[in-house]
Image 1: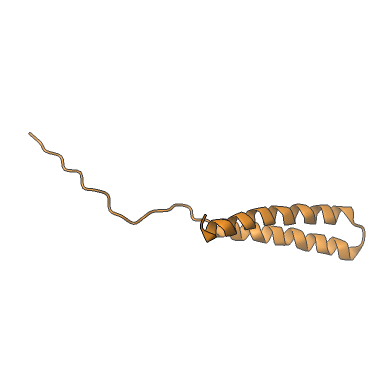
Image 2: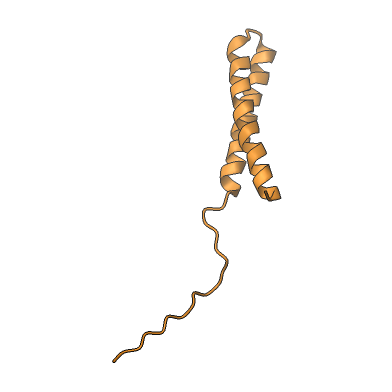
Length: 74
């Protein structure tokens, strides 16, 4: 696996975990500081997914020209 693939894997799992953990932390607490920490954790998860979506290539090509096709006519 390339280093890009490893980074994308870490961002995807970490972003989902941060968002889910922040949501649970936000909903389960009553004090302002804990709710703010939960909201910040959710925002960090969303930011990780934004970076993931922005950096994954849509298509990959090798920039090679296709082989010419020679057709003989009678």
